[in-house]
Length: 108
Image 1 (tube, one colour):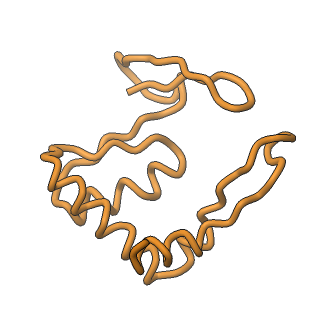
Image 2 (tube, rainbow, N blue to C red):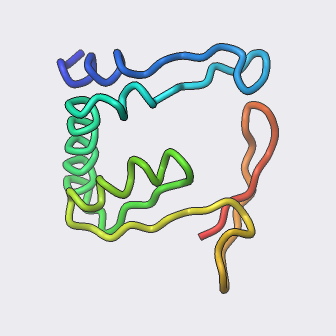
Image 3 (tube, rainbow, N blue to C red):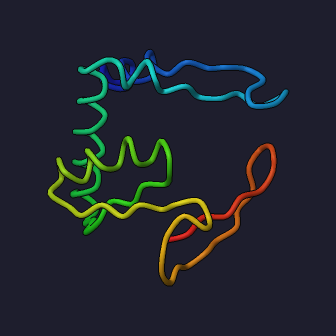
């Protein structure tokens, strides 16, 4: 494991049984509060995006907005927000998906 991986993993807190029993919520707020960790993550994701030929960075709300927007800026790419169903005006594409604790729909 690299030093960056260790840094990032040490800043992600497991919250058992949230939002319901049996689910382990991954709390990234400690990572976001640490400028060195947040910068390392942003730079690593930007490099990965560019290395793989990305032309845009897509972020699924809400954590996706927090992470993808600075990655897009760092990589010099556009950012595309993916929202919960019914939050975007105009024509959209919709996709349903399953969660550990139910189902949801997203739109772009």
